[in-house]
Amino acid sequence: MVACRCEVLNGLSGDVAIDYVRTHLQHLRTDAMGRAVHVCPDTQLEWYEEREMGGYGENVLILRRAR
View 1 (spheres, rainbow, N blue to C red):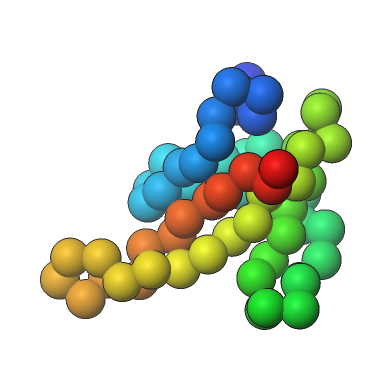
View 2 (view 1 turned 120 degrees about the horizontal axis):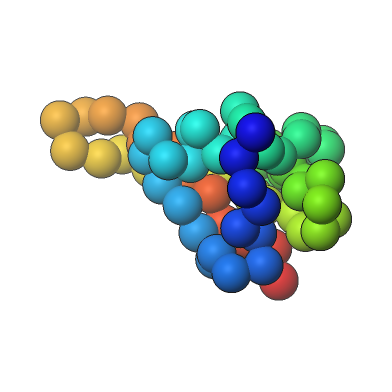
């Protein structure tokens, strides 16, 4: 189990974001913009999952904490 860092992080990207989604966050819903919204089971903070094009044409996962 991953230690909760939701209160100190604002965003994650790449493999670290993928690991955090898989091991800590829970899928909550999909918003009107088509983004997956996840929630922290410890703090109830919400996170938005976004995708951006990275180097070499990779589709990179970006997690942004909701305000």
